[in-house]
Every structure is written in structure tokens, then in C-alpha cells.
Amino acid sequence: MENCVLVFVGDGPEEEALRQSVSQVDFLQDKVIFVGAQSDVRRYYREFDVFVMASIAEGIPMTLLEAMSVGVPHLVTPVGGLPKL
Image (cartoon, rainbow, N blue to C red; front, side, top):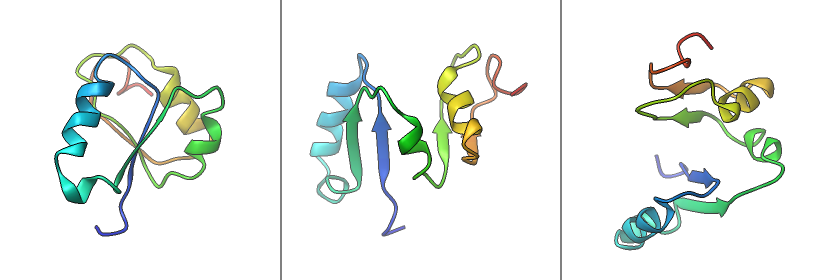
């Protein structure tokens, strides 16, 4: 998985803790990218090989709908409205 990169699009209360965790592991520093909140996330989705949403609780999230709208394969946890989508 040498060519694998994890991209976090958006922000939130866990961002700083995630950044700190990544900074403590040398081999992750160039494998994890934080792009912050974006007004046009569809351009990112088009570049992704897979969209992952590992939530413990969800309704029907717009982010998943957006990823699905551009045909990105998705991997989600079976919570809330995710299985129906």
C-alpha cells in the first residue's frame, strides 16, 4: 500500500488530535493530507478511488450522497440511514 494516501476533507473538533497523531508517526506524514473545509468537494471525490465513512451514528449524510453522485465506490458503516443508501 505504498501508493495509498488518506485525504481528510472538512474540519471538525477532532482535526487537531488527528493531525497530532499523524505527526507522531514518521511514515504517515506524507500519506495523510488534511485539506480542511472546501466549498467544492466534488473535485476531490472525482480523484478518490474509494470514499470511506466510518461513523458510529449517521442520518443521511450529504457527503455520501455527493460521493455517490460522481460514482465513487464507497465503504460505510451500517448505521443510521447508510444501509438504505
